[in-house]
Picture 1 (cartoon, rainbow, N blue to C red):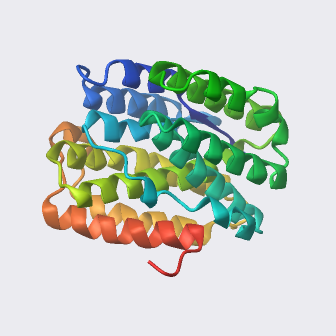
Picture 2 (picture 1 turned 120 degrees about the vertical axis):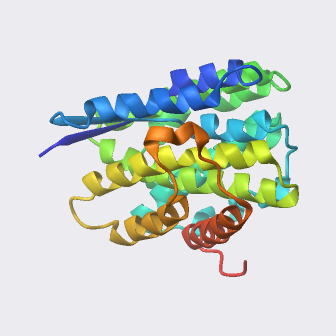
Picture 3 (picture 1 turned 180 degrees about the vertical axis):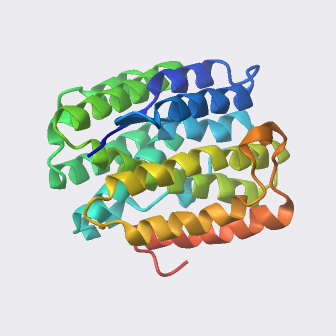
Length: 278
């Protein structure tokens, strides 16, 4: 049996954040892809995936403003009763917290952290949040975007280690699936409010991440618990049908493709959070 380790690369987050204005995002995506490809053929498969914070950089690099009412309602946390729903929505709320941090919404970041704490209790992961004093650190760094980013990166690295040390590495891919869907939803909705070619380019680049995400979920799914999730992600993957890894730097979705992607991402995200009203 292959051991699957999901590493949400915090070092890439920080690099992305500090070089957002002048760096080449395509090069960063290629770097992640190379690591994944290099380890696919071994007995231990290490998937190096960006964290929710790195993907949230979409908004900052595209120069878009914060839209508060598009994040997942915190009040829904009590409605997630199955372990699978809890893992997916832990990812969703992690993405919302990252989005708030990237936009200097410190109080909302703390609110989402408290929501994550409630879910972590259900998932028996309370130690990882309580041991780091995250709330205190967030409050002490209000308005300091650099520090908030490092705090989130630190949390992500410790979460990776915690899951690995407790034999829960497979959980990382499910949490990341929820986070990925939510960040794609946020990016799509921000673009929908004011279409932006740079943001569309960033959304298009996610074809690389989605390919690796689907592989990691499939290899984690020894009990066939996530067949429906895999099908849903593969449905999203169809929107990237023109993507070719050999020429990924030239791949950008057209208006029709991005609109269709937005529709299906919205439907999947609302399915995950149990929102039937939208």
